[in-house]
Image (cartoon, rainbow, N blue to C red; front, side, top):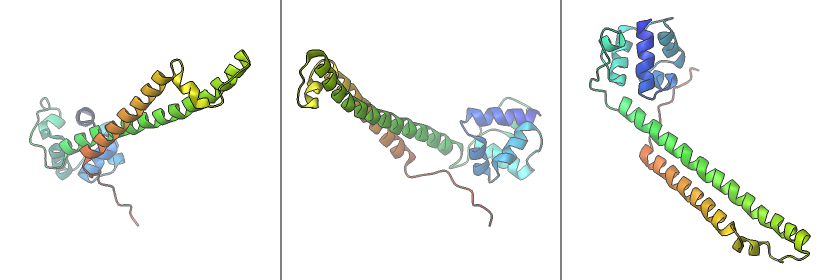
Length: 175
């Protein structure tokens, strides 16, 4: 059971999911899960591949010493960690931009509500709802919303540029 615990610790420290680790070593997520729970163990070739991908020695994975970094293979753990960071950056960026756009639409509708509220309270109103955008805190609110949209867009573009057009390998489904 030491192997499974160590494998899970090293995998999580690398920021990898079971599926991502499985793809890097050519196995399924279920196989990685079984290794981590002690229901199965990888063969010697897969163990060597795990060590190369995770950048640790076999002794470290088997619990014989503390995990010591070794030379990771090209395109392995470092690329996977960079991709994870880039994907989180992209997701946070487009989510922030989307939230900003929704808020902007709500703010525009609130101008119409302000127009009707002004008519109820003061018995007069401005004929153009956009006139209310220049009054009170609305310019600041619109400014903050536009800043959120811009920051989200910049974050999403930075994530895309960091990914550099690379994607995680996908498993081929058996026919």
